[in-house]
Image (cartoon, rainbow, N blue to C red):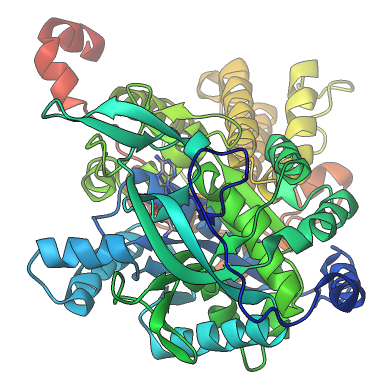
Length: 597
Ligand code: ME8
């Protein structure tokens, strides 16, 4: 996490001098007309291709290996991307690595490698993790690529030519770890591990140092009212709402100009400022432009740029919700459609971070819990609005309860040869089901059917607002209800020689298979492998898995069911094998033995 180069205000104790050189032209009048038209274009209704969708993750620093928090952002984005594909959208999904800056320059030096080799090594680790976890990105961007250098230089030149960047000088606190300048109000006292008194960033806790240098400033202060207009006109631009409110509050405060370059003598590992070989473009400006690079900027980019959605952690909200839109307004480009913000994974109540050393290795855990298990856990337990604390034990319990026992158990019951010896999608008997006129359904069965019928709409609403955990909660509740339905009617107790019993048994299985088909279809964005296994077992073909095809229980409305009578797919084993928590079992051998019994 880092904060931007901030110009300290007069009330701050830090000394600063801003010497403006050759001020090109006043912004206000000149840009009001242009920004208003950009704002109009950025509204959620205008100027977008209704069948295109573009989703991004942050690009991750390569100073250390990926951790669970990085995977979390990628899994959320992957889920939305897959969901949009299921809805029939043409979806683009970008992730990648942020490879410039002092922090990376120093990490490469400490590793004794040249910066590019170092970046390539770590970037490959992110890619490997994402591939292993079925993150189906369509573009993996690295800021060291030529296409990105071109985009950043072009973007800079546009801002420069519009008089939005000017040369100044800065003196104040700097945190290399956060890659940020800080005001005196953002700095506090601390003692390091050797007992020395040091100054630290109050937000991140990282050490800061005093420095002074010439650099270029961006006229951020000129954009405050346009940013407020944008947010007031687009109340769903930043989600969840609590983060929208945070940004509104920031915009009501002072918004100083922003330093957007570093002296080349201090920072060589970055893109040089066009026309000034003594300066390097600030890593945040460089990094944010990655979203445009992937969209095709500076060449044809409208198809994607008009429908851009960003997933970000709350630590980098200001960069995405204040500085990035201001840069875009300055460059005359539309603003992102949505900035989805999520909170953090903590361990023992502390934010998981490379510098704190409390990271959970997602690669190791995805081997332990399986790829889909890891994805399911992150999306079921991760809550965008508040931090979630990670423990292995929670993962074991949740995955065993919901994937192995509840969902896996339901599939097992409906497809077990004992109940379904013909291995077919059994028939629904319209006379057996109704609660009156000889049918055997009860009130609770109708409640269950109603919940499952409404599930796609409920899930859609939660997926669209990035509350995936609520979608999974709703699916899980329905799975429990379907298990309750089977349990209530105990089909294993029916006398199959009696034709009415046999029809009722087939009907129970049919209803349960229809429920399972719904769950398998709706779970595809979250657990693609498990869903594939489940739907294949039900005999649902790949081209029958779109959201448009999910016509639940048509027989109850007197319509044909295309699946009825079909032979089930082959049995490829249990849906999700129960996990054994070996660590806990070692600590509590008695408890485990008892639990197993
Ligand atoms: O900030 N819990 O990169 P970064 C949940 N390169 N998510 C977490 C997390 C945690 N404990 N820790 C990190 C940068 N993340 C810049 C971004 S974008 C133009 C440049 C996730 O490697 C979360 O998405 O520090 C957070 O915003 C991001 O990783 C920060 O990753």
